[in-house]
Image 1 (tube, one colour):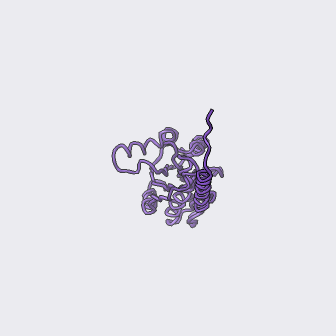
Image 2 (image 1 turned 60 degrees about the vertical axis):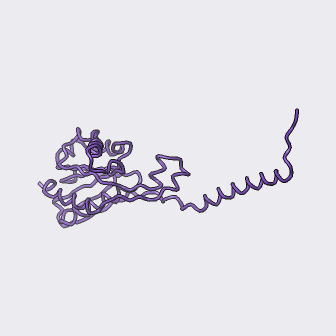
Image 3 (image 1 turned 90 degrees about the horizontal axis):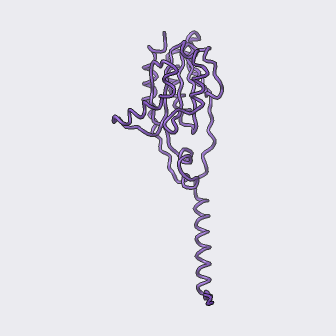
Length: 216
């Protein structure tokens, strides 16, 4: 049997190439920006001059984008003097304490997050006693074409039969490395830039349009 031997020159060349490749990989990793910090699902209170009209904005967020959306909607409602509590669903807000309710969720895999659906189911009777509006935060189907509109409407198919919403809102969200990690290997997701599609004026305008619908 004939064995193939590497010459000293070839051996050194191969070894140096491997070391260089490893060095580049390490340098690439160390040059990457750090992972985003964990999201904070905070509570907020806006307005507060009219304690007889309390509005709940309950939200579910996975990557943090929906937190800011819910806060923006709550702030716009609170500017009219109503007491508006913006609370994450995992805090278990008491629907019975409010005269109107908004429930919103991030969209994953074409539907609301499971905890948002469960919140509506658990509070279905109380929610149906007051005016309610629903909203979604998504990064797909952002266009104005028929297919995009149809797909957006389907986001609420699981929830819509449970309540009778007076209004529905659909808002573009944010896509970053945290979001990309759900769709691709972790290392590749670290190269994804942040793409923020959120339209704050649209959210505030939608909240303003709810005034005659929520106040009865």
